[in-house]
Image 1 (cartoon, rainbow, N blue to C red):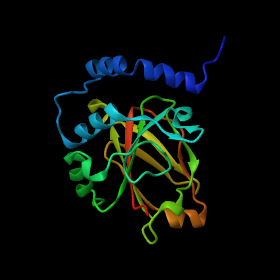
Image 2: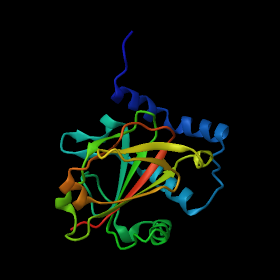
Image 3: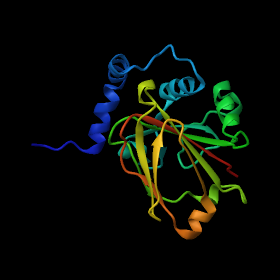
Length: 200
């Protein structure tokens, strides 16, 4: 029996993405008529996210698509200018007191294989004195809003349960000095994260 690689698994998920979403929406209750801020953000990101690219590196290896808004962090994908993002993003940022950030990295975790490896944030890209990183999780499917979507693990043994609306805040400069890494090894239910930063 030939084992499918994680990249091939991603391809399968990507090829059938729209059919899977439609079927899951019917069976699990994602309501296309729900028009709250979070739903509009999810729909906007899903329609535009693609594999992250950085030279020979691709986010496809971790089954994770990205959308870059504002100044680009890590990935070299074409970004959407912050002032051209829909009003729902501005409303969402203001609600969470991150409307002064100039970078939003949106990660799409659609399959169980979607993940992010152990890492520290690249502090050389951050504005001096502004190391606050804020990551907010959103469930892709409305019916998953009460479920645990994933877990984030820190190297100091801290474990965070990520649900719809969970806000994770940390100081990237403090974590880098302590060599405190974090990771999300797998996905329990389809999720999007929006990570807000102050970049140079």
